[in-house]
Image 1 (cartoon, rainbow, N blue to C red):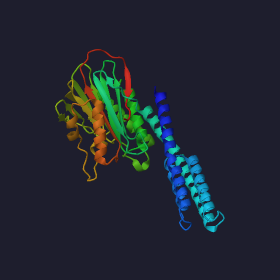
Image 2 (cartoon, rainbow, N blue to C red):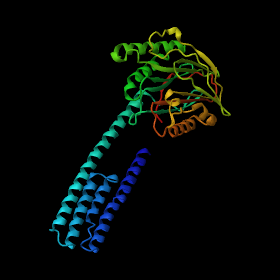
Image 3 (cartoon, rainbow, N blue to C red):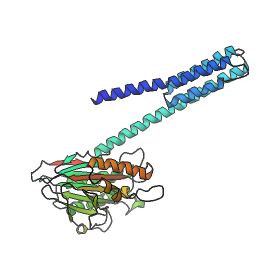
Image 4 (tube, rainbow, N blue to C red):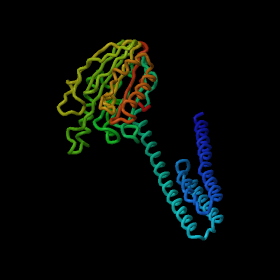
Length: 384
């Protein structure tokens, strides 16, 4: 079905581009006919350059070259009716039109090559996205999940923000959302390290503080091995660890310098859990005992919204931060997917269509409590 849809879209695109190609051709015909019918002292031939100049916006270099050749032929045809093609005026016009057409074709070829390179870059970025952050399913145990990732760098689909989730053998769901210092492609190394360490360690530690301490060690080792001298002490990451048992209407959290989540309850109720955060991962002097476990109520029907600071620090043209808690109060009854859609559209409208920092969000909606054991699964996250 997907292949048929792709072929249909290609066919439709091909048909529409060829239909638009009639516009510069019609323009050449109109200019030619009008010029022939006007007095000899009126010269409309130079306007023929409009046709090849217009073609790159609707077609490639080959079509542009053909339109340019047609324009040159039209100029020669006009010359036959206005004093002969060998006159100085017509020779100058022919040479000028031919040179301009060649330059336009060269520009079109360069633009087409850059477009192909950009498509390759986007393809690589998309592949890296799926390798690093595995897609989150719509349902994990008693949770419905939706996620959103918006990279600050225009051509990147992944950066320093990260998220992942895993289901333990007893049905407990553990979720990580984090923000590595920096943005875009330079921060991918640290993000990949945290994601790999979380997926491996989440099943080996019984408490979130122990899990946070393990990731703290991973960041410290990475910094010791790869941190440039000029960035000593500046490689760190904020992280929020969330644990949701399948049989109890609660959630456990350990924050490492990360913004607290929002708890959305039916009826436009939005609360901010009061966390006791430890310093970000990788900050020198942090000890394993510094991590605190906070426990909160998480009833069926509630939605837990996790986010990175790229969301709440997004500014509008007047420098005002995005009021996330205020905005989501209007969407507390929305599904996780609809909530992500509302936030994305509203956030882009607030910032004028572009973010200055990577932004990631996860919506965890509790549908019920369950008491059954589940098979071991490791899951991750992706960009909508």
